[in-house]
Image (cartoon, rainbow, N blue to C red):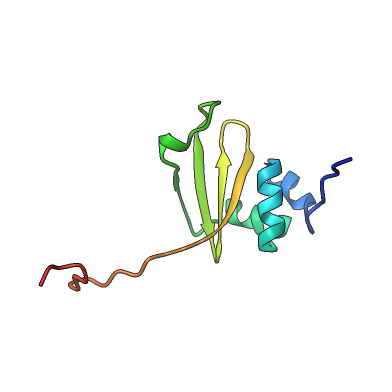
Length: 103
């Protein structure tokens, strides 16, 4: 029998009206993210933006990426399902510096 492992603080997800896909649950366990981490990432995000339509999935739902601290969470807004949990990565860009210019 393949039982789902609960996340610490998973009750906070239901308070935020969120549900986890199996994939998101597995990724959260791998990354050590708690239900509170995921709920805060969505409800108090530092940044959010629509995910590219290319990744809409077979259902064609509208997905949004939420970012907070070192976490990024992808949510299907049509049913409030957390699709995946990722590490947040940012690229630094300095105005006026063109590191890729041909010499």
